[in-house]
Image 1 (cartoon, rainbow, N blue to C red):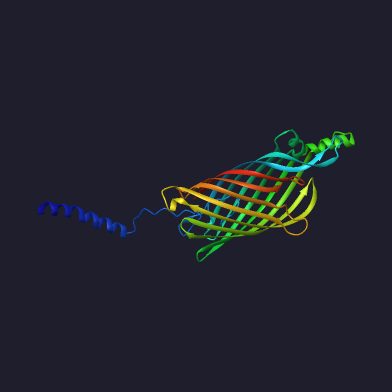
Image 2: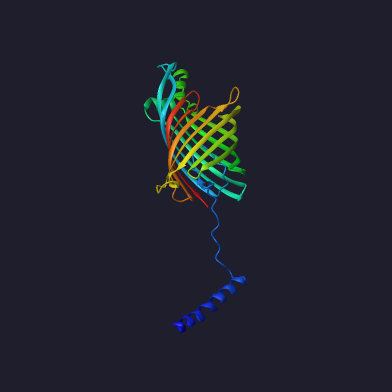
Length: 321
């Protein structure tokens, strides 16, 4: 037995010594994988919401598909094209979001995004009164921040240019009745909006399963309708989100979130008021993937004077490098 032990030791010890010698000589050693830029703080990975921005600088690609329907209150007309009151109309909406962001440093990330949107009446009277509106927005985003103790903070600045095109069926019909002329131009409306919005955001994770995020910001909007400037508009935005990851306390890789956001005008002629509330469910098993469904309610104006409210649902997929 001692002979066998001696032979094994003689075979193994020189190999181990040679391996240690090779390591000390600077031979390449397999490197550990680089950390991901996941929005993680004190063991909690924050949910990706459609309403509230987190402060984390990330390298990420996001795809969002939004569907909705709702009601709008608008003018009601008689046979001569005169307004006789208001009526309720129905509409459907669809939107897509594509966003890429790159983290240049721990404190800085930047990226670009594209947002498309469509609103349309979905029955006869609604098609006439609401018509249809198609928009495409292009934007740039810069995010700079720092961690203060247990709280992650950042300032996010979005700059967006968004042309929109509306088909106003009612306007063309009324002009035909009152002026006895068919004018195709009266049925078309082009709107161009330029928006700059700096938002301060902060996130805190009191527990590995629980995350809290708050947003406060300012909105500046320059609006042109059919090549006519309507001047500048200003607004204030505030929002918050709470999310809970059941995967931290059980084997169920599911998280829940609740969010709220309010955009309100500042002064006379400010931006249109928009109020959102939502709840969502998302997948938490893989920290590099943000996948979820968010369902919410929105009160807004499609375009003056169509005061609207609707139910929305968005499927979101986000990947972090």
